[in-house]
Figure: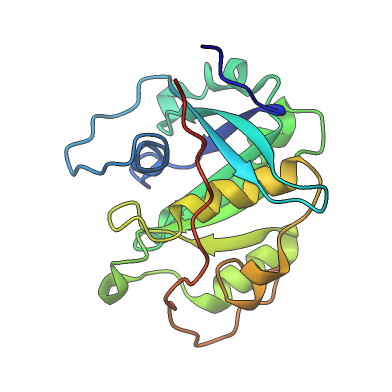
Length: 214
């Protein structure tokens, strides 16, 4: 049976190698996590359909997720995978300051290869490793203000925030904006509006409904 959906979105997941892009996409699309990940060679491809609540009622969005290799040696082939993308998840590792410092380069690469002004959601991964966090709230706050990006934190290991991450990107791609509930409960932060000194909070938002497929 052919799966029904209202929208089909190609989305790319970008960021330095080792920040957890593959772990995030697999946790979301397949529902599992393993420490034994192999480096992405070029690109991996995953698909999942989710239901988005809108003022007109629920709609089904089929997400094509392109998980790109973050190493420099893949920079020459990444642009071919960017074509036709309608949204971007930009990932850095909260325990690796270099991955945060490289974010402007990733934004430049995405914008150079995707002419349309597509939504970009900034994601700080590995939020469970609070004891070795290397990027401050102030740094992230300034960055999101400068680049006008929504920001949230995830842990592919625990699953915290992963479903919300792709749900929010889908909301941005259909043009409805981020649900107020997700901002009010600190699941996602508006540009430059992270509360300094805030600690990770338990997410209360119910994970998006995933339609069953035949």
